[in-house]
Length: 451
Ligand SMILES: Cc1cc2nc3c(=O)[nH]c(=O)nc-3n(C[C@H](O)[C@H](O)[C@H](O)COP(=O)(O)OP(=O)(O)OC[C@H]3O[C@@H](n4cnc5c(N)ncnc54)[C@H](O)[C@@H]3O)c2cc1C
Image 1 (cartoon, protein in one colour):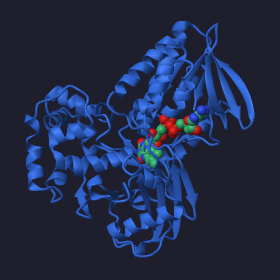
Image 2 (cartoon, helix red, strand yellow):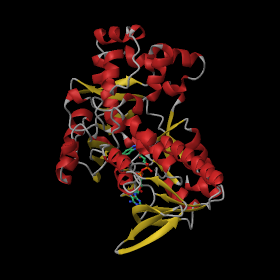
Image 3 (cartoon, protein in one colour):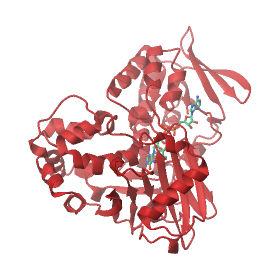
Image 4 (cartoon, helix red, strand yellow):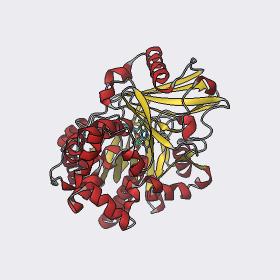
């Protein structure tokens, strides 16, 4: 977004309270392992993000998921079941009961409902309990570290609501879109996971380099105050020193809880609404093992666990299968995700207890025999946003705030959806809004983007 504003001729500065770029994107290299404590991959097609990657000259650094990644694993009855990636193979596999599959076939005859629902209400209503418990629940655990009983369907999967409205049925809708050649969103054959040879950190590193001279790290924005003649004053803290900065426009691109603090003076109601978005804690434990000590072929993306199975991990990614260069020769890297909305208390366990718990799960589900030879843990005290029913009212209130305070623009993963590509889409749209606004108002155009 800052890049777009700068290339449209605006004077931009990016402020971030951390000392390095990336926010949740957090790649660590240690002892020959490459660990992602934050996002691991992106999904193509993602036009805006891929165009950004090309413009940054990173096309050659991109790597696709490993050739051996042929399956996804889901736990049922205490065992990791291998499931094919394609929809037909997936649903005809022995993972589902006959009753569950027959219930699925009734979906086209279920009456559509217009109101927003939780993901759980929607899936139970349209597809039945089994699909909720054994597919959507683990998926929500893997994508959002969330609880489907509390998350809004319209916020997480607006495309499902759209299909229901347009076709009266998800199955009919997906088939119709596939016929029109528009079904790639739902068709794994057209979706490719990718990362970078040196990990996801490549993207923010290059982005910041391309903004050279327009970034300040280690600077916390503590307040935004409107100025009488227009524009804003930002109160900044850098270590122990406090300063201020004036700007015609401010783009608030922070997590919801941080944006809530900054928007307090401009709209206490919006601030209160954003502070209400939960961000349960999440622990990420990456463990390296000797390959010979792991019985499982690790021929998939990873394994996800449904809540009903009562495991202690949300899932385990087979990181060294997913992308090359993640573990030294003769070793594998597994990355476990613990806590989230399902078991927040586990994300606060001391490191040794957390590692023990993950190793126990890895032994049980993947036949890991030896001890871990490498470990790297990161605790996210506030993990991912959990948009609940009524979340759209928060987004409407944000747009009202932008209209009431010309020059203020708000974006972030609670606005767009958590994936990096959704964040890039939203950042682009925000830059376009800011550009148009400043041209319409004929204001000077110095922008501060946090972060
Ligand atoms: C464990 C984990 C795994 C994930 N896996 C994936 C994945 O595989 N694929 C995917 O697409 N997405 C994934 N995500 C989601 C994705 O990483 C995030 O949604 C996305 O990176 C959020 O970007 P953002 O810029 O909105 O927020 P952030 O990355 O949180 O950035 C916000 C920035 O604001 C700064 N900041 C906060 N307060 C202030 C302040 N007062 N003043 C100045 N600066 C401030 C912070 O320092 C930070 O740099 C994952 C997330 C997590 C946590």
